[in-house]
Image 1: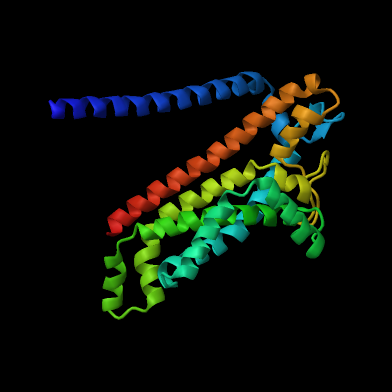
Image 2: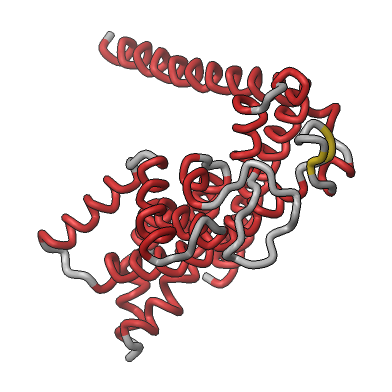
Length: 288
């Protein structure tokens, strides 16, 4: 009788989880269908390769695509090496004491800070104190700071999945601490590290508040000529088209097209993360 009751509870629990998953998938499907049905018609080669014209009522979104790419690249350059280095130190070198636990707690708390707070901090630090001005560099550095806690956490969790015996085996053969990490730990942790990093970058690519204060321009059809120039970006362009344009009803198809391109960009980055993880994991299993 008890086994039967446990079995009934188990089935009910699994069915509840499946129902929750189904509800989430259905909501996402409805949102995506709405954006795709209203934005796919405007997608064309001209839309993707031309700048906006006539007060952004015609033309394309090429400067916004390019600006998003530049900012995301700077974010990756700043966040990935620092995040991986910090994770390696915390997991492999730092002692497990009160200070280390406080640092980990602080990093996890920083992951929950609203993005607009990072934007205001970026204005103070990069725009005013470092004199970068409202530019690609200021926006990329701000997004790098915002992405850094997630990169550190994902990298450290990936390092924890590597068995301790891998490190001990290398040390027993006379390898140094860094040699054991480089040859026996990182190759097996890299898939998880890259997955978490790319997911963090895809989130940064869709942020509006940090770049709103640090460098995004309302209308800038020219391509930026340096990292100290202002830029257009897809999330900010979408925000303008949806809420601030003087003729919202006229540019609404452009807004939906911009949203569709942004979703496609984020999906592509997530797909790259999955492919890289699969290939590296397959290579690691073959090596093992």
